[in-house]
Length: 112
Image (cartoon, rainbow, N blue to C red; front, side):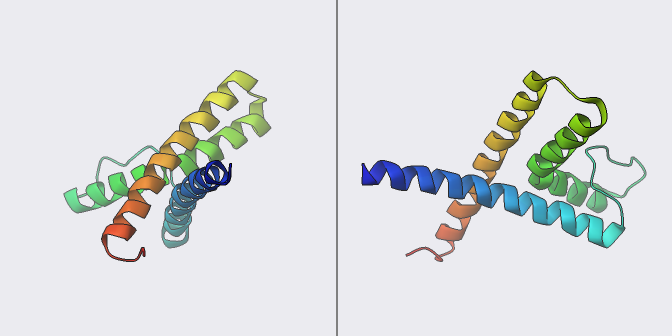
């Protein structure tokens, strides 16, 4: 029973790490540029700027999905089905991202 509880806590922690890192990237982008991060990318950027923007959007994706979902609920009163789909999709994305982040940290020797 205790091992099951530990696995649940570890999975929730992994999800939270992925979502938090996404939020940090989105907030950092907003702080630097003064604009909220969106999925749409400008086409008149250089290659390096385009690559960095793409990576930033991949990492901040779950945060942007949840933010856009809450905005849609407040503005138009979206259907509960689409709200749940967005939450599940963002949670899976955050979880996978959290696994990658935590595995990378452990490979660098920060885990004991």
